[in-house]
Length: 453
Image (tube, rainbow, N blue to C red; front, side):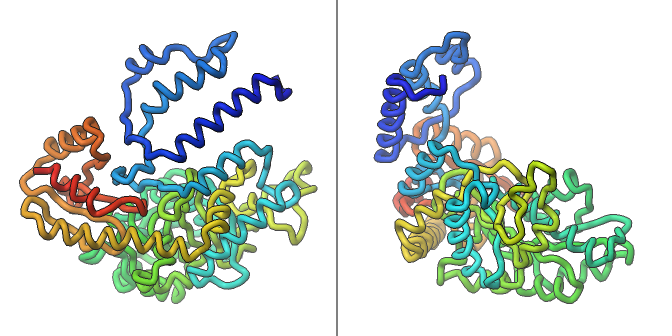
């Protein structure tokens, strides 16, 4: 079973050809299927004797694969899509084919070295100091949780080990759901919700007023504030500089969640929106969102990695060989031990194309977003609801209710026009385009908006 046989070679070549064909084509959007449909068409695939590589690949190619949406399609504009470069997607195959563990320097020094160069580029974009660093983790959920665990450990150290009555974190309603889940459920801490301004941002003045109005024992338990650099639903960037000023006054940890929007740091046209990010104690950005890497990849960077290492390094006799002073072990910086080298496809694409190409691609998506805003403004049947900061357009089809949005969304997917789902803004149902694919054009947006007549 573990020797490379002629059958294995045939299977591998078939799979390689399949991957090459997929990379070379613009795949259809495809559509989900019901469990009953898949049971009828695919049937049982895991059997005592196996169904063979040819049949297994046929089932995937003809039945199961087309039941998965192509997130890299130019008119897949729901949630936050992903549009990996061909270089990144191709290198992901190499990572999968290589028996590589990249949780420690001892076992994966080459991979860690390469990943750290990619992290350095991101840290430099944010203006973080030379000694900053971290690791690539699964996604923003793990990145945010890991950063907040390090923040609490740092606060506990500052307090000499004395815990408050309850720990708490300041957020806004627009903060990502993973942060709320991490704080309440995983960390058993409290959330302090800061009112948003008219743009939906957390601003320094509102943060200051909110915490000053709190009882002393509640205020005593604050250990971190989370600012968002590009909210998932609206694409809005918080007043990071103003928030940083308050956190510095109180000695609180500033975490900046740039899972989606952090890529905008590379674009000169919007860089000013991120002023203050250089004061972050921790920062995340997901290359699998707007930095053209495949799933799943989140860059987690700390201003002072030593504080993260104190919080996250795991100790056991069998780990003595890897816990060597001075070596950079990615598993020391997050809630993880076993770790895939998930930052390598991003690094490879950066190395192949150069960072200038990334700047141009991000600016391209921003240009299409601005053109999309003008398109919406020119149409009588739709209305823009939020002036875009980055590459998200939130708008309404005038006169529609929730059922009409749902029917439209289903129709354009059935007809393979695009994938766009309803959302809500200010309690009202509407819709949005999240534009992170440089292949998305204004013609694509025109087709979708005109389909709403």
